[in-house]
Amino acid sequence: MNSNALHTRPAVSKSALFIAVCLVIGSASMTQAADQSVEQLIAEAEAARTQAAALKFEWTTTAGLVNAARQALTEDDRRRARVLALRARKEARAAIAQARLSDQHWQDYIPR
Amino acid sequence: MKRVLLYVFTLTGLLALNLACSESTQETDASVSQTHTAVVDFKGEVERDIAAFRQYYANKFPNIDPDAFQDGVYAIDEASREQWLEIEEFPPYEFAVDSGKALFEMPFANGGTYAGCFANGGIGVKQNYPYFDTTANEVVTLELTINRCRISNGEQPLAYKTGDMASLAAYMAFTSRGNRFAVAIPNEAAYEAYQQGKKFFYSKRGQLNFACADCHMRVSGQKLRADILSPALGHPTGFPVYRAKWEDMGTLHRRYIGCNRNIGAMPLAAQSTEYRNLEFFQTILSNGLAINGPSSRK
Image 1 (cartoon, rainbow over the protein chains, first blue to last red):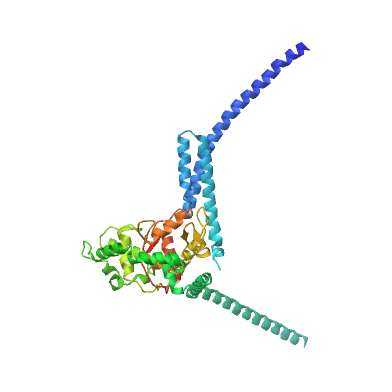
Image 2 (tube, rainbow over the protein chains, first blue to last red):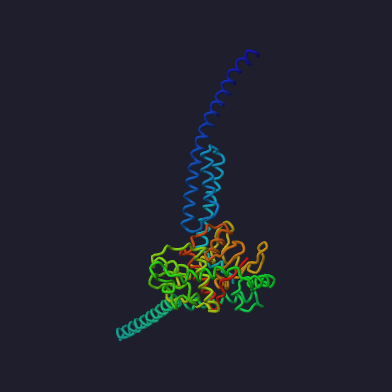
């Protein structure tokens, strides 16, 4: 029984080591992907903001959010940059949707 | 005999078909004609807009004299009106009128004058602004004309929101007091500009998802914190205004910029095409109201 137990210990240790290595590698690659997506998110937010501005429906806070996201990225605060970029993109897309909705339905808003 | 009958039936059938087609064509022509008439009947459309707009406020404020809307929010709230009338005893825009008069009468370096750029020497003309320039196909405001006058005389243009521009506009409004707005829509291009202004007025924008009409039609007369929202009818009559919040004079487009910012919408440039079209639309809806600018506001 003891010899069995001694037999299984190295197997458990190898599995644990494998999982740990996988976690480290996975974590590293996820961090890299997250970093890339922050930059991409900022680019997408800026593109949407520009589109909203071209439609003359840009909101007052969107440019500030994009700038704050860029600033956070330069300060290596990637988590904050991501949150700000997501918020900016959401705002800009809402402004574009608002422009389209107003274009189609402005006459429905005339009080009678 | 059978052949003869067959010919008769055939001819009768063809004749009936021809008549039906003819009637159908006439109907189509009539509908096209009606559509065409509807497109070109822009004056009728605008008249209906004006009537509906006035009726909206008549229903909302049944005890207010229609002409009183020239006083803005002070037409609909007695307490605010009393304060305003007291302010008007020593009007804070008086300095701007004096300064505007001096600027207006001072010749440019080339000897030209503002008076030379306007009908009637620029005295008592505000009721015709903004107008639609049928050659350039654009709405031209008083402020735009002032700057074009300067440029054509070799001077630098003025900033549009305040300062000397507001003073000049204040003086020109002062000389037009009592004249009733009479802004015309001369052609279909002008009607298109009017429609663009109308679309802007009723379109929701900004984080608050508000249209001009939300504040100045639907909830006009109600309180927004300590302020009462003014009716849009009569908005252009008092501008430029001395606004207590600004501690300064400001043009109508300065106010548009502030309104847009208040609702979280990125403001457009003063004298942008959009704001000029909006002013065109708003002024046409206020046609017939007397100019009482410059004025004072909270």
